[in-house]
Length: 264
Length: 67
Image (cartoon, rainbow over all chains, first blue to last red; front, side):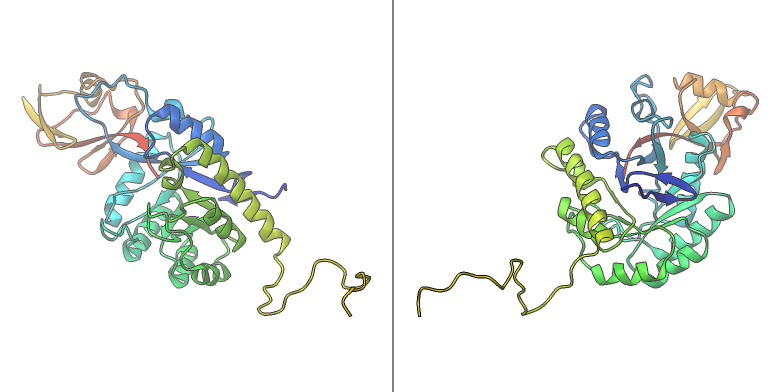
């Protein structure tokens, strides 16, 4: 399969995007990212710990921008203003890098997106030249608005961040995809490989996950499983599944030429 | 002396301390960091020339793992 995921005019071979949080150390982070085959990886922007040893290895040494497309996020931001400030810092930190993941959260229990603040932040960021991949609810109308104001990818949740509950509302995702032309990437909720495959079989352009890999008993093994699941799901989508036929079985073997019954 | 806030913690500095001098004192000289002063980005190219003022609020950030 040589069809690429295109985001903001750039081609990517992998349709799996991964986060870099919650790993036990950078060695495991690096191994899991490698096993996932991901080319786009999310990072967070946080205050330096003043007083801590500044000579500790940094994430950007383990996963350098020369090897990966880094996608700074706004995790933990609850207002448009904080999200915009965070991504301005990210752009400075990454030497003018403009591809970002915007997420503006509504409350700390659900981590559900605040779409009003998200829209406001996206408008400001796009006006400042950012290329915005946006985390949002699976509301098709909001998704279309986010596309209309210039977001380069729309990233609906499949279930709550870190919940591992899987694809809870495939109909909404389909409604959303029917309305949006930019890539649609399921972001949040995937728990295991079959969830990722289902998202891709629905026709999503990609899947972004962090906890499903990092919180697995063996993260590196799960990263490889997710790579295969995303590829399998994509190929199944392109192949076009057979229609579901309720109450009508259809044999796979010929119905003619069956040997005669000995019972008369 | 002047008092500035660095990531929420107050810090006393001599008058006419540059951003570069503070970053060096904190141990981040040459490291990949970004700095915001009173809500505005300070480009690295301005670290040497920009002098801190009493009451400045600074945010010094790095990239960490996240989803």
